[in-house]
Image (cartoon, rainbow, N blue to C red; front, side, top):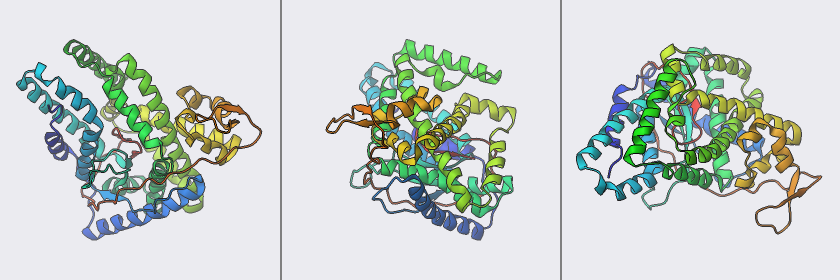
Length: 410
């Protein structure tokens, strides 16, 4: 049973997406080559600053154009939604085939339209969920940069291209270091995502209720309210799971923002100018653009950057980088949403405690020292695939994250 017509989603998205900035073939080639080089350079800066070690050799990023980003995200959606698709397939006999077919096509068009909107905004992302390789093994992840969006944004902001590209790479490489240096983190996000999907109510009466809630959310967003589709369609059980997912994603996004600005002054001379202009741009856009951002929950994503970065900064200021890095010890040491809002509570619970020797779960006791630095893992990045840059002139906007962490905003 096909819940979403994925081929139609790709076709719709690539048809609707706006073209990228007009550049010559040589300019496009140089941008791709520089982004690959800067992504490797950025990873070294990030590893040194964060003190998160990985056994994975630095890899150049995958560079794509807007249609390439859409195709990559559809592949990721397939992987993310597979558990839910399998469940629905088991119930497929209860639904008339024509209803299933029409529903899949309608949803395919909707997904494609959303991806087209986001494809002109995302600067880059670390893709956690990828299809298996030819050996049937799931790759650990892939760092993707959307070249036309980066080029357009640096042109629109009128900033130094070399500095801006490295600045973007610092944020995205932080995500690669997080997920390759903390071996349990990817599986934690995957399991929470799967639990969120399988907690869906999928009987007809419940779905109709969800659709009514979604309609109310659309109306609220148009009026300028805080309504968004994510809140509208989730169940009570999903809200509890989403709270945990929100906390971990706020952490990793905020950590990325903190690192890009903390490392920036030493390697990106114009970082202060870039940050100032970039922040101003995030808050701009037409009324329609702002409505869509609220509706898709993108404005909430912006809050994640700010809240997460403030949490990291407060903790590092109080207990140093080694103390902060205890956050990567296990799922139990991740901050809750309450602790992100009140960093001192996380510091008291985790950073100023130490584990009892031999206690598998890490039962805490008061401690006077910093404790050991977190262990790192040896996950391997998938070899990046070369992409093309695309051409044309983009749009303004904020981030568009898919169900994969690490989407930097444009």
